[in-house]
Image (tube, rainbow, N blue to C red; front, side):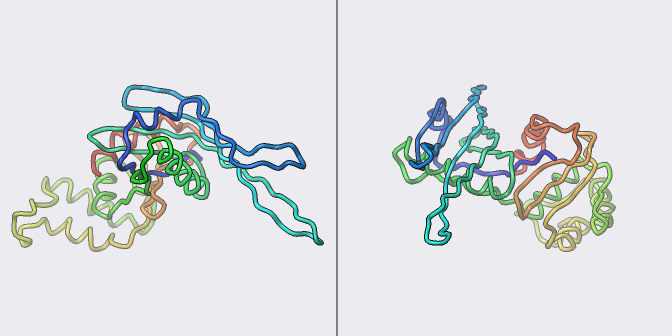
Length: 236
């Protein structure tokens, strides 16, 4: 399964992130094994307002066994993709939840050091119910979650009605009643799986984990990036 965790970048520019090219720093060591633990950036790609790279961060913990301290070494490695547009930065980390959480924090620390500013923030993207519904609505062919199917039928009805929601200046009574009901039903949703008209494969979007992915082997990291740019970013 290919899956990306989604983040927002605040108070940093693409030039700040371009400083990561060829980045390498020793962060710890295990002298008895002559091993250095490092943060490294590899395969850095610069494509205008987009950059991508592989990031690896090593760290250790220690345990005491029968009076002796034994080091345990761990590494998180992930593919990173960033887009800077309209004074905003977006970041996808392809990896597990634990890896994404650790790496996002590590990148935030590194960029702060490189920029010389503590204002840089990399935080998990927040998808509210309305945003998720609109993403699904514009792209789904079939919703696979059993308890989502009724919502799917209503979404199609709301779509056909031609009017989802009025402007904030209009009265609440004029709001499309079908869509209002859909939002109430879906208020507690955390994720949805559906057949995407764009990808032609199933896709999973999770609000709780701020992730997007697919369990179909035909779907690639580039497909996920393209989907993010086409269907998610413009609703944020």
